[in-house]
Image (tube, rainbow, N blue to C red; front, side, top):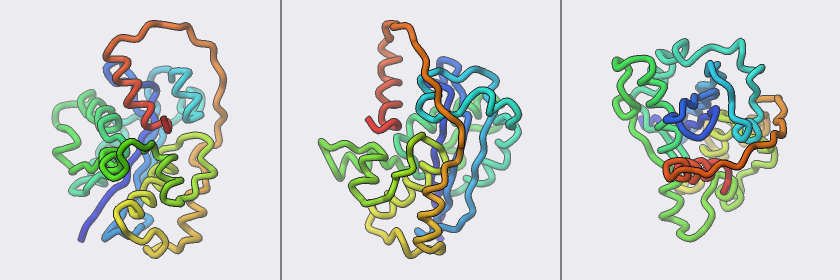
Length: 225
């Protein structure tokens, strides 16, 4: 049995080194390349403010997260869920970096992602398959005819479901004949995971450091750059 978890996160900002945290985790389970419906999804209270730029991307507000659990409340369940699976992540260094930071904040006993799962980066895979082309999730959805018309805002579970369909198409598998019917998969992909609105903010212009520029480049891959 091959068990894969397609994973995505939303965060308060660009870099855990700057104190940013995970605010949403979405996971979709594939067993032998079939959707099982055994998904994992959580909104999380980060105990800090969300950057305005990040809020414009995912539309998740500080107010919405006030009554949500903290990462410490879900970490045991999350590790049990991903244990032994291959994680399928687009621009994996971004999400894995944030997950490892959350683990570190809660104690050395949680180790790092690579102690629990292996990781496949679909961005790296797509760049090998389509050199010189855009390989954001939106670009791949268009290339592989995966309907993402409802992706007006980013959402971890929605993006994980879209990425699962892209991954199956990109690696030569069927995207409509797996456990759930094509109609069910489409309905799930078209259901936003958050019905909150993004807001506009005016931000000061601040010169970025080299580390910030590198983090920004990684984050842009998630935004469809």
